[in-house]
Image (cartoon, one colour):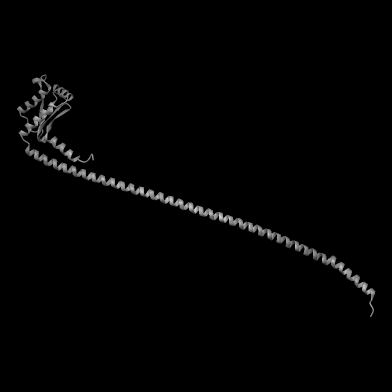
Length: 254
């Protein structure tokens, strides 16, 4: 069997043409598609890598932000705890001050009530004592006691200051003398009282000295002289009133 050269050449030409056609219409498009695909894959890989890097950077940023937020949260919690502690201490201090103020008000109120009760007791005791003494003085009061009271009155006249003596003299000239006695003043007793005034004022008044007389049994014993605005005298009632006031006032200054 011999080789057909023509046929062989024809097949070679056909093969070459096929190769050219395949290269022109199949290989190049396939290669172009593959290159484009590879480029797309490379681009996608680069984009994915860039996205991954961005994601890692964002994750790192988020981590730092989270750590900063956590640190800020801890600082804020610590600050809130300090503020809460300070507020608690302040409220406790205010509560202690209010409690102390309330105790002080209570102590003051208790002291006032105690003082008021003591004053009431002293006042009641003074009134009872003075009333008992008044009854006793009324039983003891007589003409003899009245006479001794007039002697005390005379001594008090002698002890008047110059201003009081001048006031007494002015009242005597104006006829403004009024004697008040616990017992009815006899003529002798009236003259004794006028004589005490004359002795104090001197001879200028002489026999012209006049005075009015009245009786007040509430004086118990004693005599008072009203000369204008001047009041002088000694009475058992005045002594008992002074005693009652003094007894009721015991402890007030303390």
